[in-house]
Length: 209
Image 1 (cartoon, rainbow, N blue to C red):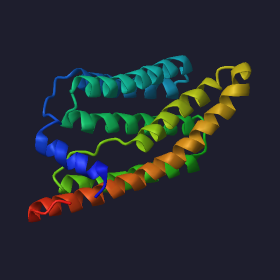
Image 2: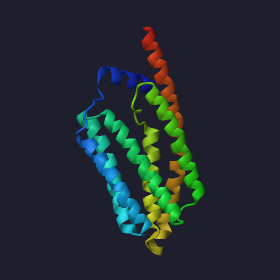
Image 3: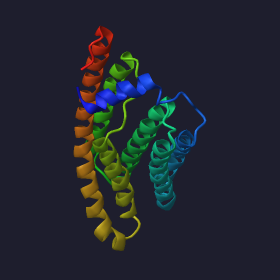
């Protein structure tokens, strides 16, 4: 039994993850979601500065909603749902926009979209176990951090040749690390689902490990 799976089960039983909707972290996640269509409009119309600003705001609010939720005990089931949805929407819209602009290749989009489709199947399994979401682990956060910073840096490289010299190699370094960690995180989530299933079975039989 992994520590992560035990924490999932114990938090659920103890009610540490609430059903509250109107919390500061949830509002920050909503702000991030509202920025998605603005970003899409900016990237398709080549308003690169605005697109960068939206991505920066998304990154800041992503950090703040998790920090505030942990520090103030405001973790909620809605937050567990909204936060990864916002992360994935930004990653998907960013890679599609950058591929449309020929900044990144379409095969990279295929690799990341395949991962998202795989995780959609994992989350269906999680819901079949009566859980809305899974706690975001360090590898998942590191992967998201790399990707959410990779694409703005690549976009920054389009603004001028002077920026391109350092921004393009830095952005691609973030891309490769982020992509590798993204798939590693998916594997860890699969292990969490397996351990959660085993934990629930042990509780049902009255013999938790």
